Image 1 (cartoon, rainbow, N blue to C red):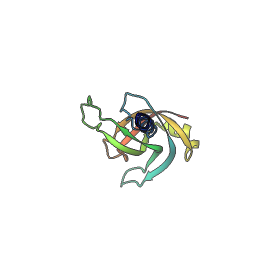
Image 2 (cartoon, one colour; image 1 turned 120 degrees about the vertical axis):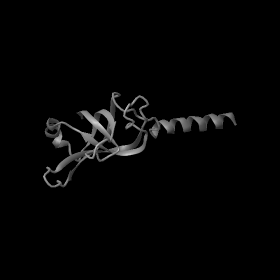
Image 3 (cartoon, rainbow, N blue to C red; image 1 turned 90 degrees about the vertical axis):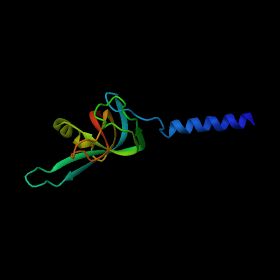
Image 4 (tube, one colour; image 1 turned 135 degrees about the vertical axis):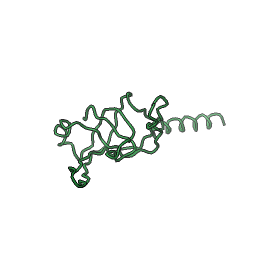
Length: 130
């Protein structure tokens, strides 16, 4: 009976880690996420330029812990995050354009949506793509 219980406990703990039940943190914590990059354009509103955005579709959903120290209150807990908008510099768009549609690893800091230009609940400020 003890062996069965210990076996069950070991399987449960192992599967919890494998399923990614440990939540990520918002910046300044650094994260590395694997997924595929896609591109989207929002049509321009009158007098505006069209908005080009890149998104990271994750290999596995993640959760993000609420930031208790966030004075804005924006950085709330998010569960089952599957897609993130990528915050890139103009230079990064040029540097990484050959990676569109490919599976990659993105390094950076997570932050929560807070403007009309943010199109996913959680975004990643990109420091590097491999």
